[in-house]
Length: 279
Length: 316
Image 1: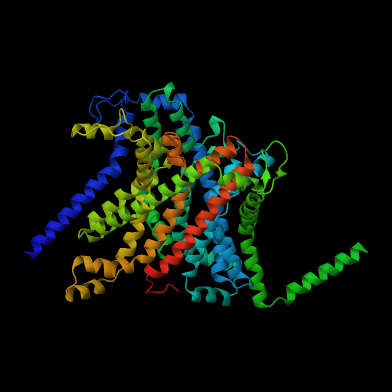
Image 2: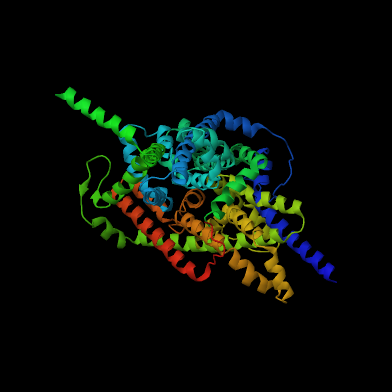
C-alpha cells in the first residue's frame, strides 16, 4: 500500500514536470522546425507543425545574404570575450586582495566597491553616453567594451573563491620566499580555476545577450550585436519572410544551448555559487 | 634646485621602501592588486553615478551646454502623468514577476528534489535551465510569434479546445500578463537551480525525525524545509525584484510598450526621454528615482526578512 502511494506520487510529479518541461522547450523546437520551412505566417488556419516537412535551407541562405549576421555574431563574440578576459583579470586581482591581504581600509573599500551591485545599469548610462560621445566612441565597439572591463560582481565572486583556500598553502609559499605576486599567480590562480570558469561563462552569457547597451551605443547595422540585430530584423520584417527571423534566432540561440549542454556543470555551479555562499 | 628636490624625494622614497614593515609591504601589494579595478570603478561607476545626480538639476540636450534649473526636473516628474503611469506599470509588473517566478521556481525545485531517479533529476535540471541561455531579445521575438492574437500557436490550441482567442498582446490587461509570463518563463531556471541546491542541503535527519514524530508532508515542508531554505529564497526574491524593476527588453521588443502605454516601464520611458528626445536631465531624474525605489524596496525586504528568514548555520 505504502509502496503504491509512493509510485503514484513519483508518477504524478514526473508527469507535471514533463508538462512544464514541454512548455520550456517547445518554443525552441518550434523555431528550429519553422526555420526550415518557407512560409510561417500563413498558417492561420492550419495546425502548427512540429516536425520537418521539408528541409529547406533557403531561409538560412537568405539570412546570410541579406543581413550581416556574421558581423552580428562576430561583434557579440568579440565584445563578450574581451570583457570576460578583462573582468577575469581585474576581478581576480581585486578579489585576491580583499580575501587574502590585510591593508588599512579594507572593509570600507570593499563595501564601497560593492555598492553598485544594487545600482541598475540605467543609472550610469547617461553620463557614460556623454563620456563616449566626448571620446568619439559612439557607434564604436569600444563603448561596449572599455567601461565594462571590471565588475563588482566579479570582485565579490572571486573574493569568495579565494577565501575558501586554506591559509597553510599560502604560508608555505611565503616561507619558501615567494612574494605576493608569485603567490597570486602560481599558487592561488590555479586553485580557483573552477570559480574562474563559472565566472567566465556567466559573464560571457550576460554580454552576449545584452540588448540595452548596444541599443544605446550602436547605430550602424554592421556594428550591431546579435540581440540588437535580431530586434532590428523584427522591425523590418516586411522586407522578408517571418521564416528568416526564425532562422536568425536559431543561429543566435542554438550554439549557446549546445555549449550549455556540454558545460552545464560550470554554468549551474556558477549560479548556485552566487546564491549559496553568502545567501 | 630642482635637482636637489628630486634627489631628496628619491631618498625618501627609497628609504620608505626599505623601511617598509611586512605589514606595510602587504598593504602596498594589496593596493597594487586593487589598482586596475579601482580605476574602472572610479571612472565608469563612481563618476557616472555622481554625474547622474548632478544632471538631475540641469537641462541638458547634448548639443548645448547644460544649464542649472534647480529642482524643475523633479517637479515635472511628479506631475507627469506618463511617468506616474510607467511607474505604476513597473511596480505591477515587478510584483507579478517576483511572485510568479519565485513560486514557480520553488514548485519545480521541490518537484525535482522529490524525484528518486538521479537521472531524471539531472535531465529536468537541464531542461528548465535552457531558456536562461537565450537572450531576452530572441525570447521576446519567439513569444511574439507564439502569442500573436491572429496567427499564434497559443490561440490555435485554445480554439482547438473550443475557447475564444485571447488578445495576448493587443489588450492592455493581457499584454501585461504576457510580458510578465515571458520573463518568468525565461528566468525560471535561475530561481529553480538556486532553490534546488538549497533543498539538497537540508539535512535528511531533520525530515526523518519529524516523520517519526508524525508530522505530515505539509507540516514537514512548512516547518522544516521552508525555514531551512529561507535565506536562498530571500536571495532569489532580491535578485528577481531588482530584475523586475529594470524590465526593458521584452516589452520593448514584444509589445513596444503597448497597446498604448500599457506595458511601458520606467526604463523604457527613461530610454525614450534620454535617447530619443535627448532630455538628459529629465532622464537622469528618472534614473535616480528608480534607484531610490530599488534601494527602498531592497531595504524594506531585508527589514522584513528578520521576521521570516532563518539563519541556522552561519557561513563564516
